[in-house]
Image 1: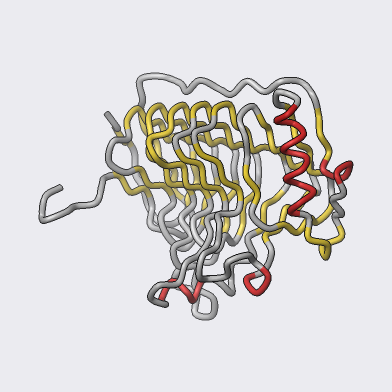
Image 2 (image 1 turned 135 degrees about the horizontal axis):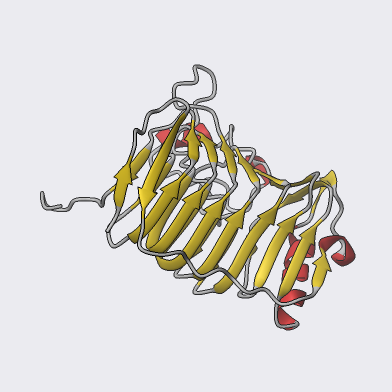
Length: 263
């Protein structure tokens, strides 16, 4: 059951909801794996995909831990998370997606930027920023057959926490948690993209947070994007959305697609 209370508007409003419980939070083992120790360079020029993935793999082989992104600007292509991992961006850290002309797969078959499936105990946290460099991607929303990567895409995961980060200018959705994941918490996250009405660079399909699953908490987030601020599709239950400020965007969408004229 999903129950919304209060007023939801496009500009500077707060959405509230009620739920039956709180999501279970991830448990991350001790141990820190700084990506700089695996060859990453925060110079805004070097491509760090291999180094970041190596740090994640090392943490995984150790049974889990925190993969630390220190201050600096780290360009990267797609990376895959694992269970019992906290991808932590320090204050002053920018994890930046490779630009469209260098992103693997381009608009034909791009992998999502930070992805994982059938995982448990996953955290993406810190006071840093993830920058999608999405402006060159956005016009492809109008091109038949073109594809764009999501910034964070998790499927069939249990005990997920995304907190305190700033996410900006994703090529498509910023957070997409799908395939009936469970125990999902998104809190203290700032998400920014141009509105879809921007006369120069409209941020088409830049949803802030899309969740399909059970036992979901979205709280204390600050969202202004070019499409839905929050969505949850069919089969989603036990959702609490509280104290979230929405600027531009299409508000909170709750429901599921229809097929053959039947909801």
